[in-house]
Length: 111
Image 1 (cartoon, rainbow, N blue to C red):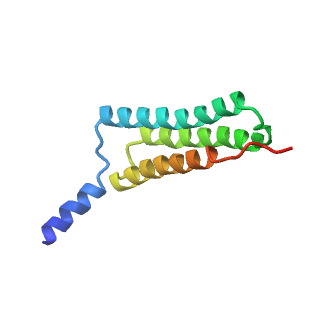
Image 2: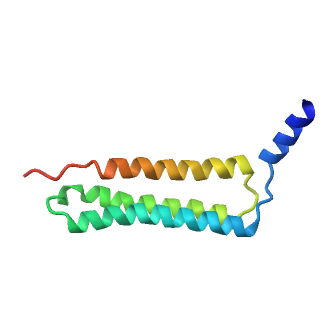
Image 3: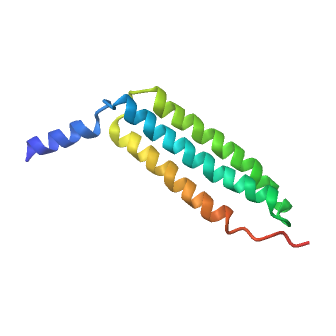
């Protein structure tokens, strides 16, 4: 039993991560996050009566830049333990899902 716990602890704290897997997962995250924000930008510029949400447009640019920085850190540095790396990826994905739910639930502006 103690041996299994030690093995699980070593796997969770491992910083060994294949370079190809790191590149692939970071590329997928960049595509997903960029796609989510690009979808909002497209909706903003093509929909009518949505000008009152300009602040959210600026926020989405900051949102995207911060995500790119975090993903870049995950790609560049190999010292992040496996449990933290996976948790960060999950938080980025869930954050984008909730961002999408929020953005696409906005109502048109009423004058």
